[in-house]
Image 1 (cartoon, rainbow, N blue to C red):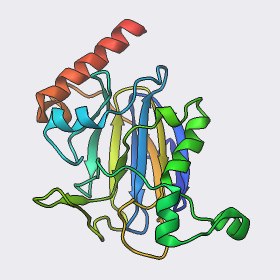
Image 2 (cartoon, rainbow, N blue to C red; image 1 turned 120 degrees about the vertical axis):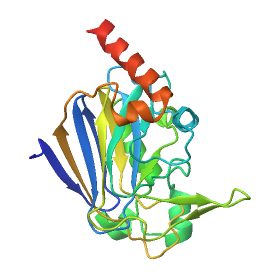
Image 3 (cartoon, rainbow, N blue to C red; image 1 turned 180 degrees about the vertical axis):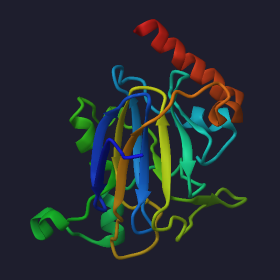
Image 4 (cartoon, one colour; image 1 turned 135 degrees about the vertical axis):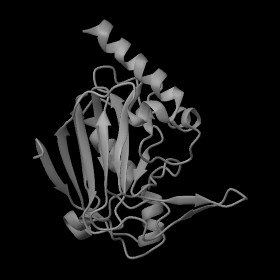
Amino acid sequence: MEPIYEIELTGAGMWSRVISRGKTLRLTDLTGGANVGMLLYHAPERHERYNMPDTLKGQHIFYLRAPYGIHSDMGRLFASITGDTCGWHDTVCGTSDAELVEERYGVHNFQEARNEFYRNGRECFLIELAKWGLGERDLVPNINFFSKVVADVDGNLSYMEGHSKAGDHVDLRFEMDTLVVLNTCQHPLHPSTPYDPRPVKLSVFPNATPTMEDATMTVRPENARAYRNTLDYYLLSR
């Protein structure tokens, strides 16, 4: 099926759009080693946003993968992961900031490097959020697609290099009209130098309406409940 929308983002790129329910966003790692930091907001009511604690505890997981879902802070389902060649996407490490990038990679500002300056995830999020009337107080924990982070018995986190390969992809089927805000900055725990964020392709496809027998709805009862809440919202609001 041909995508209805497609764009390639360079490493350390940023992007935001509203994607309506009934459409699937495919993220493709073009060269391997990519990271896509993502925030999600209900498009018409932006006080409703991705909730990391509810997403994890409701599904008894530490990381995202197919066929699990992405929950809002109002008990609804933003999106279902319907395709996934990686099998592990970080949910707990947040994003990079200016201090971290300077400490790890050195100073490489716009005055010296022009468009090749070193961006960080937090500033990219804030730039995109400002376009939609949102700001610092609207920042919440983000998802890091394509990145794998494991915990040892003491709770120490380690970034796993080489997890995502060129051509790996993840599909997000949107169950709500959603403002998607993302950037392609390196994961905050990425240990390597030099600064080398990787490019990603975004493709959007139409999809069929899911049923209650869909894999995301049956993997955990909390997902079916969140999806029913989502259906109620659209039944009553339109």
